Image: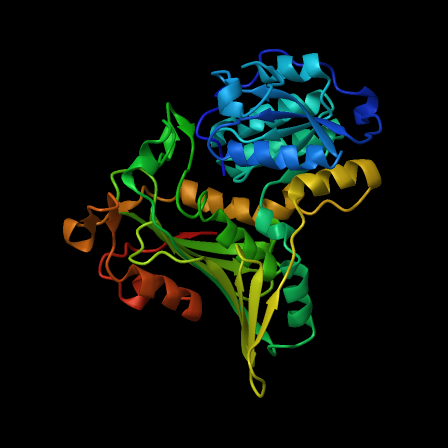
Amino acid sequence: MTSETGPITGPTTAAAPAAAGVTPPVTAPVTVVLAGARGHGRWHVENIRRLQDKGLVRLVGICELTPLTEEEFGGELPAQSPDFGELLDSTGARAAVICTPIPTHTDLALAAAKRGVHLLLEKPPAPSYAEFRRMADGIAAAGVVCQIGFQSLGSHAVPAIRKLIAEGAIGTPTGVGGAGAWARDEAYYRRAPWAGKRRLNGVDVIDGALTNPLAHAVATALALNGTTRAEDVTRIETELVRANDIESDDTSCVRVGTVQGRPVTVAVTLCAEHPGDPYVVVHGSEGRITYWYKQDRALLQRAGHGPEEFEYGSTDLLENLVAHLVDGEALLVEPDATGAFMKVVEAIRQAPDPVQLPAEAWHLLPAENRRVVPGIDALVTTAADTLALYSELGAPWAPPKEVSP
């Protein structure tokens, strides 16, 4: 998730990369600059403070167009500058957390990489596959590492569920569904100039339900299917609609064909009647595993057994990045592990603009100042259960599906 405010353009200058693309060793505490400290960036401020208390990191700079006040920050401020590159140069930071508007991700990431600065880059990593490749290839060439901020992929549930599948707990896996029924009010789409936009000033944004607020549902479903890299995707079908007065989709579904031969279907809405926790369900010939990724909780249901529930821990992605830099632990979410997700983003980017739902297909909930699509909760659930698209489930407002090879 990206910050509501933050640097809109990258720095105008860049220091030379380390010799031969090799950066010097990193020791704790790792010095960190945060780009984007408002909106979701506030969560990163608190997380950095937590890791600072553990002696793992030290916050040395904040990059915002409008400087934070001490009252807003909640204490004595580190160095601040609206110029990300200047701040990296002046602080000598070894790592950066980027939580800025989606279109700025690639340029800011590359500015850091050229300075030998390692990265935690918020999701979605880029608004197009071309920008994603420019970022990932540039980072690799610079010899730095980058963690993509899909926190659900830091959950210990992901490898545990993969192990259950490999052991045959649900028989032969047949596909993965994802369901997200959330609610967002009118203010959500007015929080920043890029909110709810597909493009802004001619630049791709692609701030839709599948690509930003419920991107974890897509990435987690793909991961549990073993479909993580771009080359794992064979076909993408999308259906994008909107009840709100925005450019991007707020009610959408996608079905991904995979080299594994199993489809991944994710259905989401920001116009739910009764919002609930999103989840991913792995279907098998002899059972299913449902995973509520925000709770790190899974339910195993299989033939001949009673239901079994599991709760898991999670590894914080910035903490994992520090452990990778200092102790050589494996990085959990490297850029190429999100290539399949970025193929979905690209399919949505290339699809026709989302269809505006007719007035009779939604209503305003005055008490919450948000739009609701009647029946959408059941459609989201059924799509995840059957791996079908909205149009195949008889939604009268569903547009013709768009297919991306």
